[in-house]
Image (cartoon, rainbow, N blue to C red; front, side, top):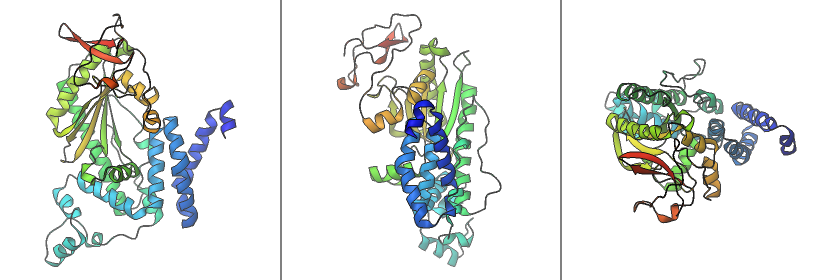
Length: 370
């Protein structure tokens, strides 16, 4: 396969698509064989998908493997997120009850919106769990202030784990629509700085790994669902205007939803060692559950997705990578920058993109002396 990639890189994409199809239909294999294939996929193919930059395929593969290798944990995590994101208070309250509390509620006649059969753990088949994994192409599209509705194919069975997946998609759609309306009302239109919204659900496997790594509960994972806001920069010509737009949109987000204390990071003024730039904030969404919002310019987005700040580069190697000069709208880019006290000196490196204030306005700059 590697030799074939030398002549035609599409070979690896075909193999990746084949493995994705195999994982979607792995329920046809005996359980021991299915687990072996899932372990190989998680170790090799998920990492390869990450390096190729096909994040949604990686997320689907991870969750398919997770469903095969740890079905009970998969079901409980999916149910837990659905309980957090449900717009129905009674459903949220009932789903958060312990088994003993549920039995007590049924014995003493306490009302609930759940059927009694949901009290016991379902005996779900592997196919039911695989069907509950969100297809990668469902969340792949981006749009300019659109009205996309998320949903699963109507032909799927009505098992609880699939219903929980529908709750997750509906919650993401609700957040996106709310922000879309607020942006349209609150921000002036500037040609070239169009706003693009996209939503994503963190893979259950990634969420589970983060919980174990940090030793935290599910309600302390603030990026299980996220909205990304990308501000157009006119191909670099409107870079400064786009940055101003990012901070204006941050105000819009914080007016719309309550910020979560200690969960705001300004990676535009203080880039990561990789050169990654974006505004990150966590808020309480319309259902009261955590929601992460990322705001960046188009250039920053391209660097984060496929440039020097690509996710797998700094996650796997941990080594800082130099970034390109930012467009300066015709101004000299070799502008001296004095690091602020809030920026650790070890993070300021030669030719880092930066911002400076001149005449009350933001200007693009590049570090010429650390």
